[in-house]
Image 1 (spheres, rainbow, N blue to C red):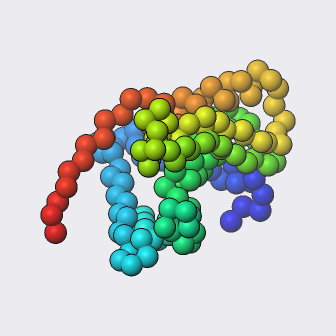
Image 2 (cartoon, helix red, strand yellow):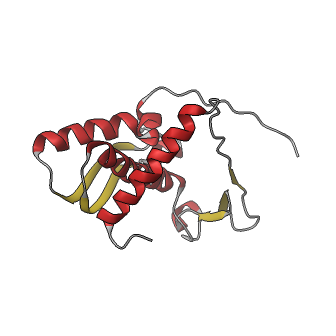
Length: 174
């Protein structure tokens, strides 16, 4: 395992190069992502299964939860923060930029009046989503502007949040 972020970026650049080579010579096959949330009877806690990982999601006591884990909107912001951070790493390898430190903070607001139908004027979706990427980096302003442009262009979760995206659903009786 690399001992610091610059060493990790060197390692990542090699792995990305290998993956690009493999993907450019392979038949295009998108990777299927499957996540399952199952409501635990009696508690309302919602363990989410992602590959071999379980993430416990819950609500605050005000929403009849037990505060055992993040809420779904918090996970959305978490997914965005993680994806932005990862995309900053990928873009850095593409642009020849090295970080000594990188962290991404995402903030947003949610108005429970919309979700609970207290007010038809209140939004249901999280609002005012912003991010701040903090980094120790030896790069000029022009390089950082290009880096941010590339991150915002290539970040899958940011793109899913900012572009119209069709989501199809169905109910299956068990």
